[in-house]
Image (cartoon, rainbow, N blue to C red):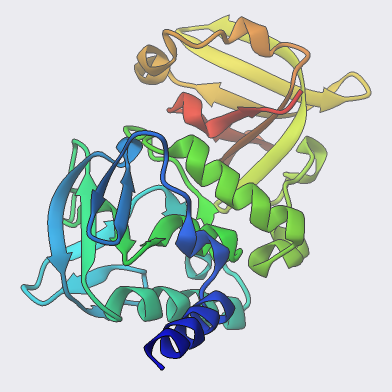
Length: 269
C-alpha cells in the first residue's frame, strides 16, 4: 500500500509541476536536502526561509519582514502584459514560494537600493527563476552589475519561446527586428538583427543595425560601462546576427538600448 501511495503522488507531481521544477543538477552543485543549487547561483544567503506573501511587483516577503527580489528575471506585470498573464505569473510564483521552505542564494552586491535581497531562489527541487521562465511567465533581464547563471536563464527562456508558452504567444513580446523598435521607448524589448557596423567615439561604442543601407536602431555602450566589456570582442560583432535586450530609449527620434553588461548580448549567428 505504501508503494502505491508513493506512485500516486509521483504521478500527481509529474502532472502539476512544470518540467523546470525538476532541473537536473549540474556536474558540480551544492545539494541541501531536496534542493539542488548550481554553482553559478552563489552562496546561500538565507536557508529554509518562509515566505508569507508575494507582492504585486514580485517581491517575496519573509516572516521576519525581509524582502527578496528574484535576480535575473522580469515578471510580465512590469511590462504591460495582458492582465491574465500578469495574474498567472504572480499566482505561479506565489504557489511555489509559500508552499514550503525556500532557500535563497546571493552574490555581491547582495541588496538593491531599497535594501531588498537580490537572490536566486530554490523551493524543493524547483529553481523559481527557471520554473517561471520555462512556463513563459517571465523574461530574462540582466542587471548591469550581475550576470550569474545567465546561460541557464537564457536556455530556460528559449525553451518557452520555442513552445510559444505564456507571454511568447503575445505578438508584442516576440523579439523585434530593428526596424520595428521605433515607438517602443520606455519598454523592455528583445531586438534581433544583423549588425551593420561597430563604431567608437567619445569613449562610447555604437553597435548599429539597419536594412537597405539605413541605420534603424543602435545599441550604445557608455564610457562608464566600457570596463565591463574589456574581455568582449566588440569588433567581432560586425556582420553578426545578434539579440540584445533592455529598455528602449529615444535619442533624436531614433531608438536605442544602452548596454552595460555583455550578458545582454546573445550571438545567434
